[in-house]
Structures are given as C-alpha cells and as structure tokens.
Image 1: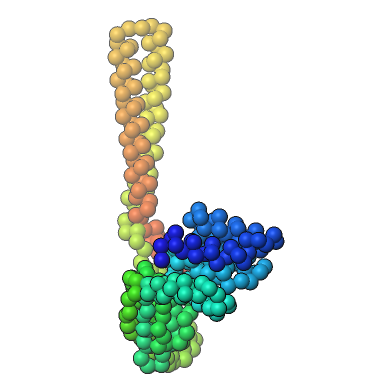
Image 2: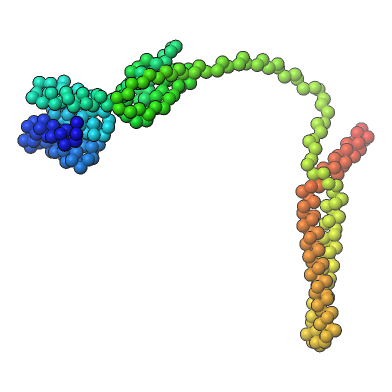
Amino acid sequence: MSRPIALLLVLTLCGPALAQSKNEAASAFARGQALHAKGDYASAIAAFERAYQLKPHHAVLCSIALCYEQMNRFVEAAAQYRRCLSEGAERSAKAASVKQALKAVEGKINYVEVKSPGAGGSVFVDGVAHGAAPQRVPLDPGRHVIEVRREGATTATATLRVVSGEERTLTLVPAAPAATSKPQVVAPALPPPARSEPVAEPRSRRRLSPAWFWTSVGLTVALGGAAAVMGGLTYKTASDYDKTPTKEGYDTFMSRRLATNVLAGVALAAAGTGTVLFFFTDFSRRRQGEEVAAGIGLRGSF
C-alpha cells in the first residue's frame, strides 16, 4: 500500500470517530496525525497510543498499524491491523480496505522455523523470548540474532539476514557442558620432623664479588679527592694570575683546570660504575660466612 493511499485510509477511518471530539483524546490523535505527516512515526505511535488509552477505538489501532508499516516493522503492523479488525473494523464499511492492508503486510513478513532436537529449549530473537522450541518465528526484514537457550547447556546462536516473504528452517542445538573430572584425592600432609635442618636460601641473582664494588668505591673516593686537590690548586693559580697576569701563569691555570675537569669526570664515571656494580654484587657471601663462623663459635662454647 502506498503512503498517500494508506494515509487517506487512516484519515477516512479516524476522522468521523475522533475529529469532532473536543477532549484530550482528540488532541492526542491530532498530534499523532501531525507527527505522522512529518514522518516521525515513532512519536506518532506514542501519541496514538495515548489517544487510544483515553478513548479506545479501532480506527486508532489502524493508525498505529500504518506507522509500524512505514517503519518496516511488519510483524507489529500485522498485529495492530488484526486488533483493528477484531475491535470493530470488521463490521465497518472499511473492512475490505483494512483486510487488504493486512494481507499486504503479511506478505512482507519472514518466517523462520527454529528446531532444537533433543531436550528442546527456549527460543530468543534479538534477546526477546518467543517460547519453547520448535517455534515458527515471524521476523521483519533485516539482520536478527536467533538463540536457543537450555538450562545447563551452552546457548546455540545464529545470525540471519532475511528478506521480505522468506521462509527458512534453522536447527540450533545447545552444547552440553564438558564432563568435569573426578576430584583428586589429596593425601594428608605428614607432620614435620622433630628437628629440621636450615633451609638454604635461594641463590641470589647477584654474582659479582663484593671486592669489585668496594674497589670502585675506593677509586671514586681517591679520584674525587684528587679532583678536589687539583681544583684547589687551580683556584690558587687563578688568583695568582689575576694579581700578576703572565703567559706562564695563564698556561699553568689552563693545564690545571683541564686536569681538574678530567679527574672530576673520571670520578663521576667511577661512581656510576660503582652504582651499577652494587646491583650485581652478591653481598650474601660475606653474611653467610659470618653466620657460619658465629654458629661454630656458639657450638664450641657449650
């Protein structure tokens, strides 16, 4: 049914019934007509449903059906056309027109026969329950997610894209959960021995001898001291040069300043090396040796 003809049908059916009413139902219906004319079918449905709630009339149901039809929601449209017929349109002068509209809509509905051999299950379409399987489900054209859910089993799912007037058969069998393994019997733990030997600590990741670390520390201190001494001499040379500028004094100042910078740089490098060595040095060797020595001394004293 084309939109102009369908709209004319709605106006013809509903005009005599509600257009003359001066109550809230008539206002709601008029608002639905205006929204329908603008193409806002979802809002028009809400207005028509309000009008029907205030003053039930089969013509309002036909208006709702037309909105669903123009939204390509043919399943809802067919349901509203059937209500329209059963609630009075069947006995009206427009019965043939409503039946023709219903027939056109039903021809666009798709049907999927959902089967689930075995213990069956519940059929869900786009998350909405449709009863127990097997089930012949009406669908609007488009993409749909079909599920068969069964208690204690994994849901079987299929995604379909259907077109107008299509008939299909779909078999979905929920998978039974995998059998759980038998619980393992764990033997009771044995009581600990009366006296246990000391448990060796896990081997440390630091593998270098502490001597390397302490050597780098000593070297850093020595170089830092030398840099400090040379810095003092450089400062004195600079003071002497300021008092009595000579070429010899200038050369001495430059050489001592260079030596100070070199010593300071090497001292910093030694300090950095010592820092790295710290993270790779095994200090536990010395502590273990001290603990062993202490243990021997105690055992010897008793």
